[in-house]
Image (cartoon, rainbow, N blue to C red; front, top):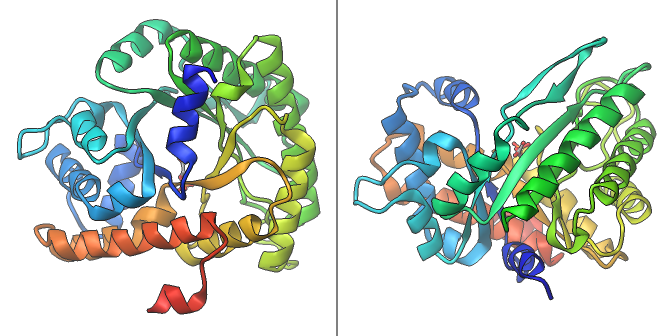
Length: 336
Ligand code: 13P
């Protein structure tokens, strides 16, 4: 078993998943302003250190994805953020892309940037304690999109990123996110997502990436958020499994879904059914941002000094997600 495979498995095995706390300062400002908290670096740190010090972290979180600001911060009790995460038994990770920009010659689509100087940045993050990384490609669905150009250029970037990350002895999270915005059907989402993921693996293989040392972070197969033809949770799980079974090579150790704008309960329920029905050999877990933090952020915003209330809310959410990785979640446990 390679070192990279061991790290990947440590992050996603035993009912654990990933806490995606890597919101850029811009995104975090939107999240904090939505709950009327000032987006200062102290407040961003306070919310995050509250989650990272919780019991739920120890039991249910195998890895945390950080943003550059956070990985460099020290808590008000004197521990660095990577040390705080490691002391809970989880592995610190870091978002290394620098964001999605307009794609030349397909101006309504995006290409993710950040390859220039990446090798040097990776060395710096390794020294700070990171052992895995994230890069997100983003695709929209419409009758013309995602275009072949967007599919191909983002897959190329994800593969070059992954090769550099493995060279630096870290595990790349490969995140091709097909957005749920739009009025498309779930079958179109299935077709487009499959095309996107297959192209990513063509490029990963071309760039000689060790597929046993990556984690795939895809979207689930959903109808567009404005579609009139919403499908059941059972159908979501079946279509998601069909997509991954047919597009992901068997060497990949695991899949950690993004929540992508689903509510906390929907994201949990869908993951639970995916695991109840799982006929693939992949571990299926969570790498949720909003679906792990939304309620906790709401509670925290009412009194940012009330550590217990915030942690209790986070602990419950993380526990529900962990139960979903074992297909053991239920409405009854949710509301207990
Ligand atoms: P969400 O779960 O809120 O979609 O965030 C996950 C993530 O890391 C997006 O890149």
